[in-house]
Length: 127
Image 1 (tube, helix red, strand yellow):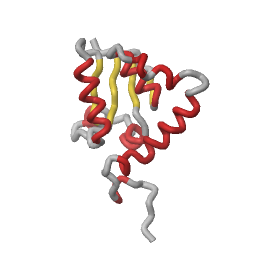
Image 2: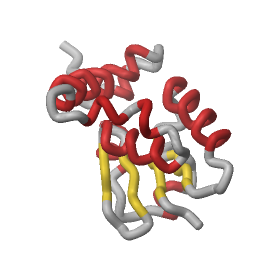
Image 3: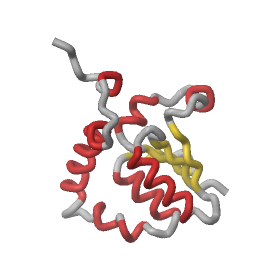
Image 4: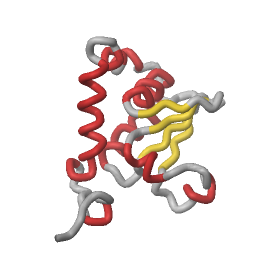
């Protein structure tokens, strides 16, 4: 039974690296992995905004509850039994700093993974 659906960027090398590990650890097939860049994404999820999902990681619990950012990361790692590795990032004193760092990573991950091109940058303006 699917517990969580993870929406990830299949064009991101770091995202694919993590998804490969998560798939291996998901021995009970409790996670549905959805590549937001798959050709069938829009047909399967017409109400979801791909740009919003691409900006930060999103996951949806089976009950319909959405989580995003590091909360989505923690959710998926908990499903595979490895949440303890990520849980400290959600502790009250660490959470604000972790969220800022995650936000910076998410914003610049295309550049960090060598995928930066003009089509990736909606805020770029040619002068």
